[in-house]
Length: 319
Image 1 (cartoon, rainbow, N blue to C red):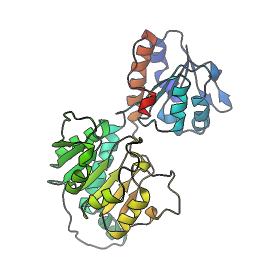
Image 2: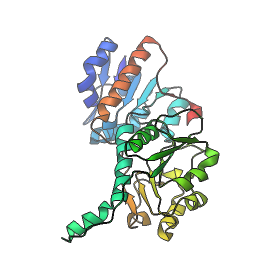
Image 3: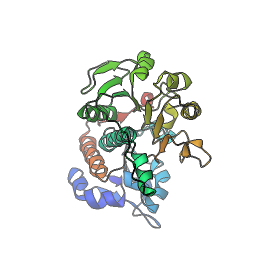
Image 4: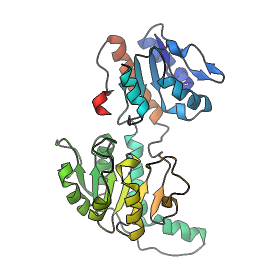
């Protein structure tokens, strides 16, 4: 079996891969080309470190187009890019990695909540200007977090929020009990949840049902002191409506890690609005993710080699 992986995966997990699939041959992108014929690969592991090296980034397009590919595993949870749909159309098994970056993303969300209630931007500015200026700040205790999507990420946000003494409301399409969520509501009660929340956290995948889920009416349903935190996809929010709401004071502010167009265009007003925190779609980055993702790939490789069903298989109807 020929398996396409990054050089780092080959070095760190080559022995484990060959223990699972004796005789497996690993090929990787290097300067000047691959270490073998990539079009002979049966399996491809798209690990997050493909993004961090020049050779890896240059190989991404080709990785999705390998001619004899039968199974493609992605480090990412999101599969809304057309390239993933193209794999399924070709009959390639596609698996993804929901949950492997839940911990850093949830910690990002809580960090942004704390930044807002503690008014850390005021302290930072005062220090820069050498001003001794005590600040009237608040705390998270007793605040309400409305979490739109309580899957892996939303569930971890809820767990951390409860540790800070917050009330949690979760919105979920399929009703079932979720740990650390005080109240679970269906999509039909979105406006009700928004009206109760001090922080609204978006953690849903992008789909036809969630595109522009938050528009003008939904933003008006939020409390004026509330903050929006988006760690899902940019198109879940109507960005024009959000910009208007932020400028008019309809909501207090927004922490945005994702945008309708990425990178965020230099001309976007979101860069300069004082009540907006812009981060470049990397709330989920952590050095610990590499091991988490690799363990999931290895588990699926065991299943693939044994002819067993794969974990986290993505089907056409999921896109």
